[in-house]
Length: 205
Image (cartoon, rainbow, N blue to C red; front, side):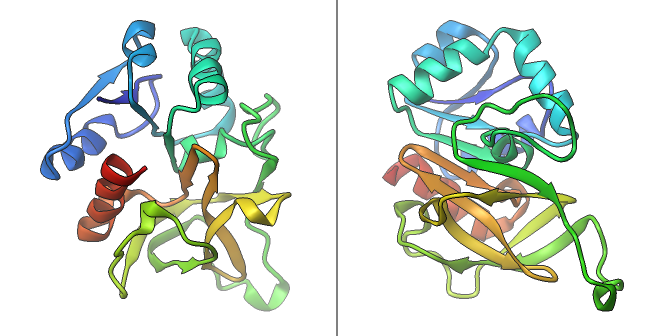
């Protein structure tokens, strides 16, 4: 069973609907026993970094998530803000992140000759694969995904970078570190491309 973690942030229903379309059972829950029994986890998220971390702390879920993800090596997919929370910290706020990967979250910064580029980076964009992963198995050649974000992860270890995307410069759009997978884009809003990615996560990770 895939458990979609409910910590008051994110498009939980949209993620569950997409999983339902591919025939994968899932549960939206903030219950520790549900999370403990999960085969896989999804940490969605939209909004500000500090709000996300505060909600996780206030919900009391951080210890159980650390146990599942770090000790038991349960596969987890972080989506948008969910992926950013994997990092150590963010320029967006003051609270520390989960620090599951050696990375920090930074705001887009453009040169003067790139002032026409908009923040947030919003809309459809492509990905460039940096290493092989089952989560991208048999992905469509013309794959594109839906983004809406002003911040992105910077990995201190290049081996953690799964894909990059260009918006003024190449930024990390997916990460993978052992059982940790993150996507800066929204697979639940990315039609057949996102559906394929979620299906791979459900079946091959």
